[in-house]
Amino acid sequence: MRQKLIQTLGLGFTALYALAIVWLYATEPRSFKEVATGAQVAAGTYQVDQKRFDAALDLFRREQFRAAREEWKSADPAQSDPTTQFYIAYSFYREGWGRVYYDQDLFKQGLEAVNRAIALTPEPINVPDQNLQLHTAAELKAELEQGMERNWGDVNPLKVMRQRK
Amino acid sequence: MSDELEKSSDDLAIAAAREVVVDNKSRNQALVSYWVLPNIFLTVALLGGLRVGADDRAFIFFPPPLITLVLAVLLMLLFVRGGLIEWQSWIAANYPPLRNVSHIWVLLTLFFASAQAFNSVLPERGLLHWLFSFFFLWTLWNNQFSSFDARRLLRSLVVLFGTAFVMKHLLLASLYGSGGGWLQRVAGALAQGVSLGTLDAPMFAPATGYISFFTLGLYIAGLVLAANSKQ
Image (cartoon, rainbow over all chains, first blue to last red; front, side):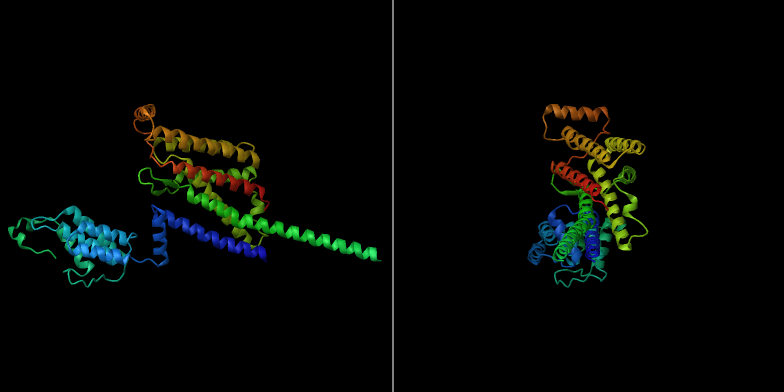
């Protein structure tokens, strides 16, 4: 009976250990800190650092986009919070937006971030922030995609009249 | 009458002591077979593909390349041929299902540990990766037709993995290392130039060598334990 118990417990424990190894190789964390964060995400206990998030939001409102992104990256190291990823995408949009031309590299990174945000949740992302004109991830994605398209409208001189959202 | 009673009570005490010894032995064997061995082999499977980046000291996980799986299959065959794994005592129709499942699980962990042990001592890319793979393949294929017992097989494996470890983590690491003197840099540049860059090898932090050493040590310890534990 005792031998059976040892067998069963051994089998169960080592199966969990094997799953953890597969998970490590699949997620490829780069440090022990990332291992801990990844474990929190897997266990469903992951939360963004609210203090850093608020600090980043403050920087974003003061148009310090790069600094804001750094704070948001620290607040959400696992890139698992849709709202944070949405704001990161928005900061790329605002920084890359120009009256004469759009910075394609920043828009591309913004598109990656907004796609990440969309992939994180099956629900539509809606951010009720009065300082933003685009509240949903779909709107932001469309705006970023439009900014990356090339067409004859780009040479229209009236384009300088457009407004940043 | 009292002598007889005394004798029979002594016999009973001896039998009880023997039973305790047998019970302890079987419990310890079960612990080794179902806890220690799979955990050792899984740890080898975890650490065998782990490298530490030279620049940022970040973990890099290298999944086992396909060739290491082929090498592991050959090694498993060698284990069976060399008597390190006695197939009949591991899996049999008259065993309880749980026991068979547990034994298959241990063999599976041994297989992946073997693949990762090769992964640990194989250069990650380039011509050297294929050269090392070829030498492993050649050695294991030749060994399939040699007469082995478990002890000889273990010695042979220690030499095989030890040589590959020295080649990869001592010789090659020092040849391509960035912290060496001018002679080392010249030798590295010459090796690169003569081989038209095919000897290129990624650089890792020295911790990688320590991890590999520990991994191989653990793997060999697991094999010794497997050979000594009578199933």
